[in-house]
Length: 288
Image 1 (cartoon, one colour):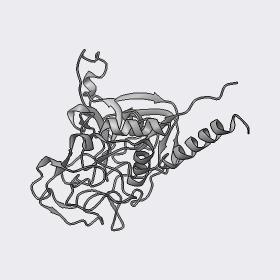
Image 2: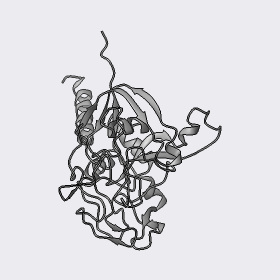
Image 3: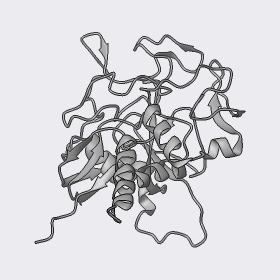
């Protein structure tokens, strides 16, 4: 018997398992110069600044429930919401948030609600959970600058939203947002009261889906107003991580969350019913 055969089979099985959990297909995002932030947005989006980015790969869609389930099964992974025994859920009608016992990625609205749909973005995952998933499939979380660069179409253009300027086009919504009067009435005019299947609203000019609306998405960066971005990080500060993209809870009448410059933030161990993630991957030059 070939003494190397068991080891080879083990490696092949490991690679196959990793491929199963690799999640969405990736899109090559061209590098270039991008203007980050806005003077017309919230105070933490100013002052705007310009950065030069190298090309990178970004998941076409947020990571789905099905892909995350494969990761959990392969790794024996337990999310922080499951460890804590609860996740953050908003009460429709009042807008109040609470830690609901039993809420997790399996049932993001709580144990009395239906199970999460396989082709919807996974939610009730913390920043730590998202980072663990991306690392397991050989990827990483995108930086918030990378996210905004991609949402702008990889150009230094001053467009307001990843889908363009109009939320509705020919009677159809371009993103999954709140329709009605938040938080009392959600008409689901866009077709969905909560999350939607990834890619349900089409792709942008780069081939990316759900860069605006559906779920907020974790990025790798610690949150701070841009006015403080060049200052040293305070020693011992724990802080919060930046989220991008907005969610189905964003009411266009007053919510800014699905704009390309909008920034959400939460502690790395927190889990919410409207927050998910997608992964990125750096591109390295081939050795000569």
